[in-house]
Amino acid sequence: MTLPLVESVPNFSEGREEATLAALEQALRQPGVTLLGREADADHNRSVFTLAGPPHAVSAAVVAAVGVALELIDLRSHRGEHPRIGAADVIPFVPVRGLTMQDCVHLAWRTGEEIWRRYSIPVYFYEQAARLPERVRLENIRRGQFEGLRHELAASPLRAPDLGAGQLHPTAGATAVGARKFLIAYNINLKTPNLEIAQAIARKIRASSGGLPHLKAMGVMLHSRGLAQVSMNLTDYEATPIHTVFAAVQAEAAALGVEIAGSELIGFIPRRALELAFASLLRFDRFRSQAVLENALEARLESSC
Amino acid sequence: MTLPLVESVPNFSEGREEATLAALEQALRQPGVTLLGREADADHNRSVFTLAGPPHAVSAAVVAAVGVALELIDLRSHRGEHPRIGAADVIPFVPVRGLTMQDCVHLAWRTGEEIWRRYSIPVYFYEQAARLPERVRLENIRRGQFEGLRHELAASPLRAPDLGAGQLHPTAGATAVGARKFLIAYNINLKTPNLEIAQAIARKIRASSGGLPHLKAMGVMLHSRGLAQVSMNLTDYEATPIHTVFAAVQAEAAALGVEIAGSELIGFIPRRALELAFASLLRFDRFRSQAVLENALEARLESSC
Image 1: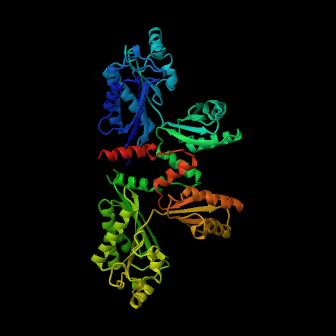
Image 2: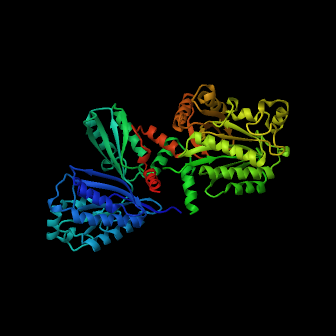
Image 3: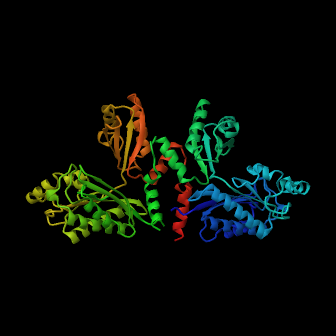
């Protein structure tokens, strides 16, 4: 028996005021919850927290933080680069172990209901938790942002929230709550200052142009290092594993006469991704996760609880 | 703070009698100890148990099992293919995490003292726990086996045990207690039934013939599958990592026009070996172990204890 463990990565529309960030962080630090990361960007005026723990504890932590966001963030005066519709803008739940995607969908729905019931903030459900097919993609929900969405809602019921009275909360907007797979943010730096090469590789490998499924990619310039980078999101690392992405970039770069300078991760990677890479690259016929000493130990310790 | 975790892989000179194996297993199942494996070989007439846990618990488990071996195994009537000097023949301690090799050396010494004090079974210390340089290598301690060593001891003090009265226990012989790094038993199967190719690759890559440090290798024939195999022990997987070994075998095989059929592990591999392989094969500039989601979670949970 593995204890169920869920990750959540709530995004708040505040990336500058330390007092607000500290209050959000304190609200997220509920019993049983582990805070893994807190990143704030002043240009985006947005903060992203990463937390994990048992489903109920993570849900309670997120709901408490939405209350703080409601109290301290006013979207009417919010300015920032990043698109947003709410003070508590996006809340995804991600299965880590011991629970299914469907469990996370139900967790998203219950959490959304609690947010609406407690704070009167309308809720949209997205990705796997979407109740309407056009809301699978978060971009569709966020189109027009807080300001535009407010006006569209007044004119048409088509964009009405999944939970709520058909209008945004006057200061907190709306919150998108979803369930999705673990996202790996992965960059490969190239030994070239030529941005076009990174862009060409990105176009070749990404899902949107017929490349690898579940892969988003774009070319960006690292001015400080004088290197072009293929910046990627792997939205289903089991279907399109990270070592497959590395091999694809390496092959495309080689075809263009460019070498790889190195890989880097932004944020976290699940252990399973390393095991998949190891088993594939060293050509194991069968690789049992239980052959990893610590995995075997943990499995036996948990089964004896 | 990581809770210290040690592995031990005691070898007993009994591989046939289920009652004896069951009694040994029961003795090893002490509170706090996790039994990870039990393998018995009838031809070798030998059994190998793998256990892990906090140092004191693992030591106590091993000492209890030596008592069972003393009671139920009589080396005077023992026959088997594998070299041995004792009923409880070899007891290595291996640092897994949260303790140093030096800690394991002291654990080996304390455990050996307990075996001598409690059972009057003489003890030799080997590998990192050796007190004499010629006893680093277990082969030197075991030379002549139970029968030969008994006679040599009567004639000369040079081979006298590190702990004990200068003679073997009449039925239980002696026990070698040591401390060593984690050993990875790793095989690579080749797409050829030609044993000589596996033997040639093994000779090329192993430490004893100037190949990769800390690598033992031999060629063996898998008759049931019609494949030749390079069978290896990695005795220091941080100095000579498994992905380096794979690349070396692949290169030597390619030079001989042979492809790799697949890899296999015998027993366990530490998580760290997977992380080293991942970081190297995907060319990470820096790979922090804490970038693995579960590692970060565990580190934070342990630090909050």
